[in-house]
Each structure stands twice: as C-alpha cells, then as structure tokens.
Length: 506
Image 1 (cartoon, rainbow, N blue to C red):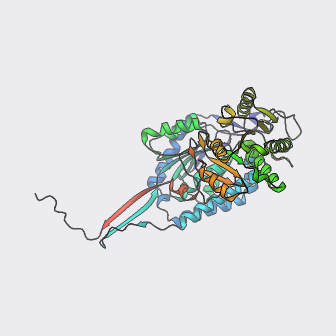
Image 2: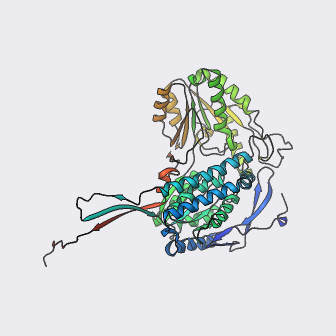
Image 3: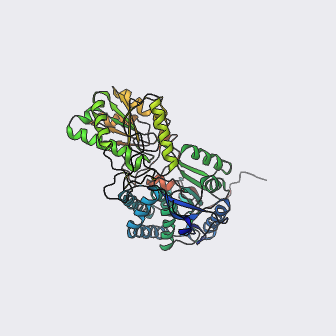
C-alpha cells in the first residue's frame, strides 16, 4: 500500500457552500481495487458533520431561493450540469474506473448515462402542466392538485455504480425543487464528490447540494433518523435497507428503498434453434452475469435453461467465460476488472465454497487468477465462475452474491420455468429468451420482477420506472415515478364566492 503521507487529504465534506475537513479530523484512504494501493485520502465524517450538512440543507430549503425557482430555471441548471459531465467525460470515466474497479469503457458509459439522467429530468419537469384541475361541480370553485418539493432529502448511494446511482436520486430531487445531503459509499466516493463541484459550477445556490463522506453506521444512520430530514432514499443491501427503514420510522419520513436482486435469466430451447440465436443467448448470458464482475443489482446471476439444450449451452458458456480477460480497467483489452474490496472477494469465495459442498458442479473459475502484468497479485481479482447442477436450497442460489458467479438450473416446461424464476425473496429484474412472441408475453406477464427483458439483458431507459417486487425494495427511480418520489401532493380549493354556511344558528 502506498505511503499515505504522499497523498494529501482532501476536504470532501461540503455543507452550506463550503468544502471542509471532518469535524473530528478523521480521514480515510481510498484504494484502487486493481492493486490495493491508496490513490486518494478523503474526510471521514460522522454524526456531527451530518448535522451540519442537514442544517445547511434545511436553511436552504426554508429560506433559500431554490424551492421557489421557476421550473424552467431549474431545468436549465440540470442541462448545464449535463453539459459539464460531457465536458469532463474522460476524467470522470477514468476516476470511476479507478474508484470502483470497472473498465474505463464502462466508466465512460456510466458518465453518458448520468448526463442522460440530468437531461431527462430537466425535460420532464419543464414540460409538466402547473397542476391538475379538479371539477368541483361549480363555476365558483377553483380546485387544483399541485406538486411541491418534499423538503430536505437524505440520499444514500451504493459502491457499485457510484455516480450513476447518485444521479438517479440527485437529478429528480433537484428538478422537484428539493435540497439534499448525499452520502456516497465510503469506499467509492470520488465521482460523487466531483459531481458536487459540477453542481456548484453550474450555479446551484449554496446549501442546496451537500455531501458527507463517511461510513454508513454513523453518517447514514444519522441521516435516516434526523428529524429535519423529510425523505430518505437508499440504494444498497437488504440488511442495511431494513435498518434505514427502522431509523426513519419514528419521524414518519418518506422512505424509498432500492435493494438487492437475485435475478433469473430464463432461456427456452427455441431461442437456441439457430446458430445465431444460440450464439446471442450465450453471449447475453455472459453479459448478464459478468459485467462489472457481477457487482450489479440486476445481474442475471441465475441461468435457468431448458433441459434439452442445457449441456451444450453450459459447455459453451463456460468455454467463453474462461477466456474473459481480467485486469486493471485502464489496460487495453481488459474485459473485466477486480472486485471492489478484499471483503467482497472473501464473501464471493465463501459462496462458491458453500455451493461446492452442497453439490454444485464447477464448470469454470472458482478461484483467484494467476498474477499478470495487467493483474497485480495485490488486486482483488476473482475468475468468472459457472456453477452447474444448482438447486433452490443452495445459499448461492437464494442469496445475492454480488460477484462473478453464475448458477445454472434447468426446467422442462413453461410452468416450471416461471415457478423457478419466481422462487426468490427478491423481485428486481429478469430475462426471457424465446423465439415465440406469445410465450415471451405470457412468461413476462407472470414474472414477479420489476423489470423484465425479452431477448436482451441489462438495458435501461431513463423514461421507464425502475423498481422491484418483494425484498427488492419499495422505491421507484427514473421515469415520472422517479420524480414523484421527491414530491408531496397538495390540493388547493378556492371558493370564489364564499357565503355563510349557517349550520349553527346560535
């Protein structure tokens, strides 16, 4: 690990328009997961820093101009932010890759998607009608339903897509006229810190955007329970999400939870009837499971394939998975980066070990790779792993691994395929591969998952809501519902010709 004295600690806490260090003076090293070396040092905030940031956001909402800024001006600012993101695409893409361990190309795509999110919510809010008129049955009554900002928003984001997930919360929160405090993951905070700088450069008033870098058990917990916070939006794991909901309950604040997934990718034999169809389904199964080393909440980590094509499909899948080039994301030709931390790799290893003990058959992977020039021994690399002959009772099938591990289950009938796909506590996303349009619609309609891809996997549209069933959460992001999360509804009833009621004679 690098000598931390060679790295200057940055003031990464931003409250009330000022960058500063943590009140305690504590700092944290940020490690590059490709070699486990520190490349930055940030402020390590705690409850005191959180209170200061929330107070700044509260003042900016209650006394500042942003909530009363016309929607056209708010939309214009969001578009300026998108332009700045495009300007800094290369720098931010590289920083995202270094921070989270993904390839630079993935980092660039993430920045493009972030810019798209800011533009989408700018267009959405600018095109809205000022309110919905309600017919009260009298020309003397003017009744209208309007939407207003909810207030101070606490935004808690995950480590796998640091800037993308932050944008899905920050863009609609600002479009609706809110102020916010964001807490990025303590291990991947760098691009969110950079985004706060871009918001300031775009002209956002002081106090509207605030950030506290620090751990969840102090900063996140305080944000969730804080009486001056009106809404808490959390994306992360089920255990932490449950704690957030419990902390928010006493103050009855709005809560939006985007939690985990254990996502099925169902492949029917007819999708593989041609060589092109077979090749595409295999390629997309690799994409579903191994993009960003499987550290994706919507990863297609459960391959559910029709029995008649299972042997051929799994053999080809394993052959190609073995050829995936692991390494530092900045190296040419690298297709998959490391896991985000040593702890995450150990977690993945424990799931693979338990699966093998429970009877799974290892088709490829299942170990740390040999070191190479593009893959330092100190990095947190793990080979893409295919586990065959899996069943529902295995931990690796039931629980979210969040790593490059694909399990294989088989089915014979359409009903059995649906039953297997729905046999999970989660309900985030899923895929269906078939050449039969009728079957595609039937199966998609029966799956209890928030997003269902047919003959594809992983694309998302800013215009479409993103959410889930079951333990995948209660929130909705993107689309009109994503904007609605950050608003309150008010009914304004105006009597233009008031008269005495005379119910009480006196």
